[in-house]
Image 1: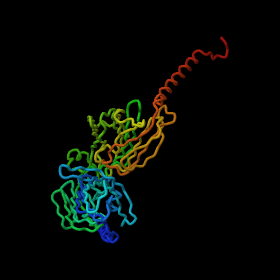
Image 2: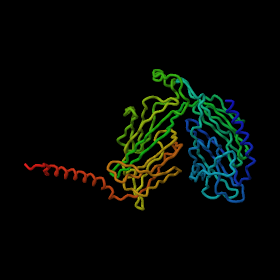
Image 3: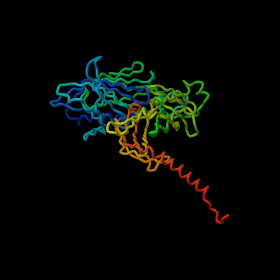
Image 4: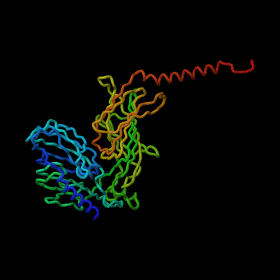
Length: 464
């Protein structure tokens, strides 16, 4: 604990000194309100900013700054421009991209937000920003018994790290329960129920940083998928086959001691409060042929609810998961082809499916999504609203001659917000659909001819 306090003291000194590196800015933040939600192991922060141009030239964009302790765990940043007032408010999405600054102090990370139209001198704009952090809750103690609740640390700043001067700002932190062991008090600060309020703070210079630590109870399921491989196989004969391979772990405080099944079954709310034994997967509508199995075999402890908008698969692993425990399993299902495969105006075909992980409130450390195209497909390309690693592979299946092209999309640090549609375009000639039937007919014909030859040809050496 002493070492942690010393590290944060050093951070304070560094961030207080970096204001000397900041030159005069053309923008200032008139008012900033931040709400941090710590209800689960996925940290969500909502920023409401009122930005003013105090310079002499129009400003086309602004920067969002994040400390190095957060930039490595930053899963997503989104921004919206607010126009209108009260009930007539409209929200317009803005282009947000990571960027680098040559004079970035102390390895600060940046995201560039582009305004819809340049902000003229003296004009203001209101923005709403959402950023999501993963692996930002530190269990303490790091090991707990079956009967103990899970306590975690959250590190942040009472004031917003920004390259701009902020006239007024307030931070609200929401915890899952009212049990808060301790929190850093930076006046003015107060706590009421599940909420801790920091501020309002007036006239903070650019790059101001005031570290705070909150120690609180969080027994929400720390479901972390270490690796997920989703394979979507397209068959022009009428269906999509989806196979998902999971390697799941409990990312919370490690379990110590022995596990008592009797205590777990009889006193679940007390014994094993931080564990989880059920998962919910949101699947596409009209799914069929759903199965759920692990290395041992099929698991029957599951329930499928289908609907017009979505299907829900609620299932249980073979054993409850405590901190540090892991499980591997496979989920597979089919969906009708006509719901997800379409033809573009230029004649190309394209798959429109959902990226991300179907499991609710789950972090995926590494997601690999493979789209297996029909044999004979050419010129594949993928379109996504965010950056992913893309490459091509070849897969051979039954009766394949040249193999099937596989579009491989890989992304790390995936959260439920990444569950958005993506498209894979390709060209395909219908004549290739006759390849496999022709091979089957040819094979039966050759067998038939060979059988006739064997029956009618005399292979005896000596004539009877």
